[in-house]
Image (cartoon, rainbow, N blue to C red; front, side):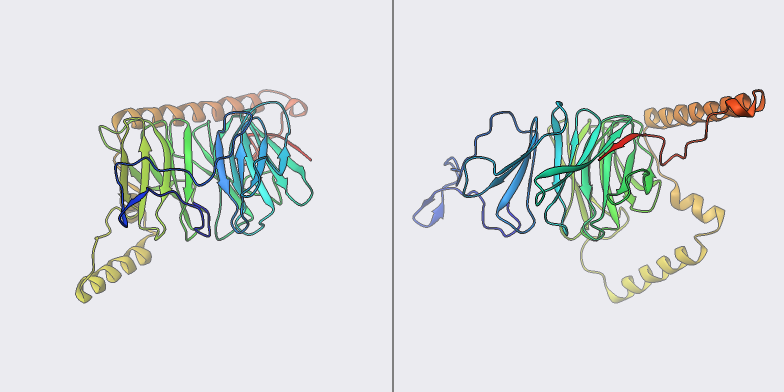
Length: 323
């Protein structure tokens, strides 16, 4: 759908009633030279962008792209328009790159090369200078496009590649779907997830989406199912009676008041996950601890002149930045 709602598909009508058994016909068709990996519509203008071996911008009234951007030779796997800077476009490529493009200058402006490939990216709808990426290294990274030399936040928790990401309309949270068969909800300024969703039958997750009212999360997985989850697992659906609302507000105030206590913080953060994910998470923690011990021993038993500078966690996965 376009943001203005002007373009959609519908079934033919019989006597004013839609014919459900008829094949819907497209209003228009655009043919590219190569297979499309991603598509995103502009937030205000009648145009959209596609990702293939290059990033192409199309107009509704034209059968050929009006603009084309190429930076490198690998395919582009994701493309997103900025919700505020309408002429700013971001993409993720198979060569581990994240690119920024300016439609007014008709040229790529910046490129960030990561340690591992980025599978998806989304702009924050309330802080449009920030975007978050879903990476193959099991983590998500939030960047400010004005300063790409370090991440604003590293979001951890998954034990396999993060395949998709979607922001809440409030801009305060985002949801991720991973190859480890879990759905997680993160706060934009939190390094750990506040909710983890999983079921026994759900397989690898390839797409996730927040609902427009930020109350539900949708996930699509490898078992050919689409599932709907509550954004707040303990939230009651339906209308609350006045006494129920007062009791809920009172419980929330107690959580905020005593949330700094270790016992309360431990209970609030506790989430049950499958045994395989729990074991994989422990192995990752053990590997990180071994790396830290190894680095400390090397620094303790070698000359200071030979020490490599310590790299912050927010810069560790960034290989280089190109202008």
